[in-house]
Amino acid sequence: MPSAYTIEEIWDKIRNLPLIDVAVFDVISLLDDPESNFEQIAEKLSPDIAANFLTMANSAYYGREVRSVSFAVRVLGYGQMKKILTSAALMDHFVQRMDLKDFNFEKFQVQAYFCAAVSKVLGEILGYEKSADLYTVSILQNIGKLVLAVYFRDEYREINALKISEGLTSRIAEQRVLGVTHGEIGAVVLERFKIPKEICNAIRFHDVLGRIVPQGSDFELEFVARESSRLVAGFTLPEEMNAQEIMDRLRATVDEGRKRYRESTKEVLLSKGGYRDAFETLIGQASGLIRRDLKVFLKERKP
Image 1 (cartoon, helix red, strand yellow):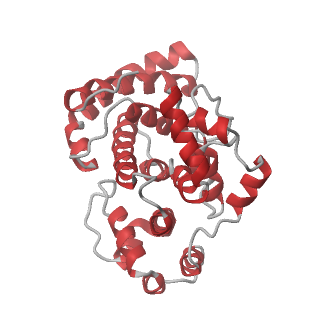
Image 2 (cartoon, rainbow, N blue to C red):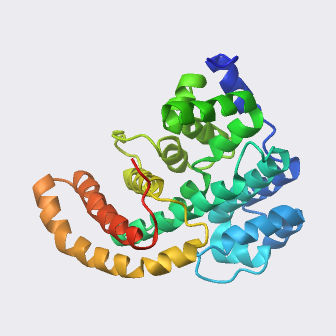
Image 3 (cartoon, rainbow, N blue to C red):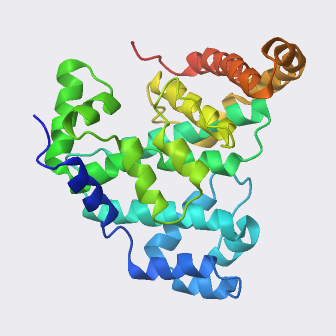
């Protein structure tokens, strides 16, 4: 059954959602202000958002304990803090408004951090330097599903029913019911917070196979984010294992992958005739290693 909304009405509603409290916008504005200071930012955060922000800042991505918002600003820098703060504030916003009977938020978080761990491992094997951007994409790539669950509840229920009854992917079911996907919705939401275009595009297309990334774009970010999402979708979620434990178990995979990557890069470059094409081949090799070792401690899902 098609949505009661037209495509234009859907986008108008999404672009006008009251996504974050005014106070958080004030903090984000301070992060864009070269005249602001650490103390001003720390004082503006509510206790709930500050706690969520510190949880994200203390993730395995940053490799050190962060006990205060002021210290987080010094350690992470304004740019990365803005991304994490936006993530934390969005999560708080949706949890406060969500009917958890219709949405498994715990599963959502486990999947996000599982994807973050896999993307970090894949990025390390390939020598991709913007690991913090991979983290942001992993945590927020399904933010559009939260938008659907909170603001398009009837359509969200219909999408889930369609997935179950016909065995469809989220993307296909969403297109059939709404005409837009959760990736597209998530990207539009993040564009409102001036999140960099490369990150928004990686979220918009994280489940689009065979996409040709335009010249001048950060194709590495899109390729790694998409392959990480595809890997995660092939396994049951590690409910009793956090991101750090997953990365620890895959440490030998990283070492092996780096060695293979160094040995095969020149050969692949020569055969493919360019780094872009070669990267796609190399990411497939690295993904194969990760899948092999994930199978040791996680159960693969049936196709």
